[in-house]
Amino acid sequence: MRIAVIGPGAVGGYFGGRLAQAGEDVYFLAHGKTLAAMRERGLRVDSTKGDFALPKVNVAENAAEVGPVDLVLVCTKAWQVPELASTVRPLLGPETVVLPLQNGVEATEQLAQFAGDQRVLVGICGLMSKVVEPGYIKHFGLDPFITLGERDNSHTPRTESLKTLLTKAGIKASNPADVHVRLWMKMYFITSVSGVGSVSRAAVGVLRETPPTREILRRSIVEMDQLARATGVKMPETAVNDTMKVIDEMPPAGTTSMQRDLLEGRPSELDSLVGAVVRIGQKYGVATPVNETIYAALVPAELRARGQMKFDRM
Image (cartoon, rainbow, N blue to C red; front, side):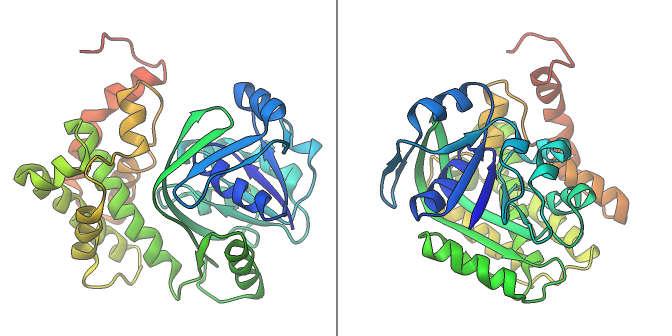
């Protein structure tokens, strides 16, 4: 299968690398130092599931050099998705499928605005990984998975085909009965840990073991649970407790990419995670005071990282 990977970082580098390792025709779209490194040295992935190196990979800066593909894996940060129209369009053919692998719950709708409603699936992924340096990815936790589905939850030949493709590449893949439930379950987890972790500057082990921060985690999740139900998603009654169990099972030193980005002064997914909870809550008339407070507390750091505000870090 001919596949384009937009964003060969911690997510795209791992999943795209596994697909290329399995013999698929993978094209990585990259810029700057990542483009130069991958042209020179290919892609290296160190993983708890087995290390591998691809000394030569297909990498391009311009999507027009690649042309139409069968599958587009969108692996950028969530806040970058609305900016991808000019990158995605040259990759689209009549049967192209677009699979977003962002955190948050908005990427599918954002991509559909310029890629077309019929092309875009709902996608969720999970793994703990980081970019050691351009073209070098280290996967250090969680069994990497991709969950996917049609926006209307129907089971179709293309979702089954993609599930088979990913499985053959050694990626744990699933096509659940209700992909939106899975999407929101990840939203509960990643947003609560990212928000509370960023405000407290603490790893998940500290958050869950300290009574005040554990309670704020739970309240953040409860607000999202009320919000998901208001949007029409049929969340299980155990969703809040199930999310707390996931948090309790995380490695104690675990942090999220949003935490790391904010701490290191880079633009983060604050607006796509905590900000999205606030926006969607306002749209549906659901109160989200905990997430509103977390968002307000972190906005100055986000604006500073984006060059929209200047102040000395303390």
